[in-house]
Image (tube, rainbow, N blue to C red; front, side):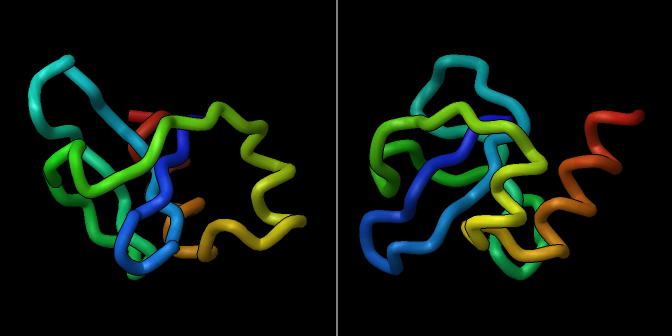
Length: 72
């Protein structure tokens, strides 16, 4: 699972799809899937999905959307 931290809010977003352009597809903390500009975020971090729940970087809605997206 790849995470990026929003520079303005400090919240973590899950990267779902990155085609290398100026934006990427992410899951917001509210569980919405959106295409947002890469410049709004810090560097990408690759983490184990189970560990993100324990350290509380992600909301349950984000984890659910990530699992739903990756299981399709």
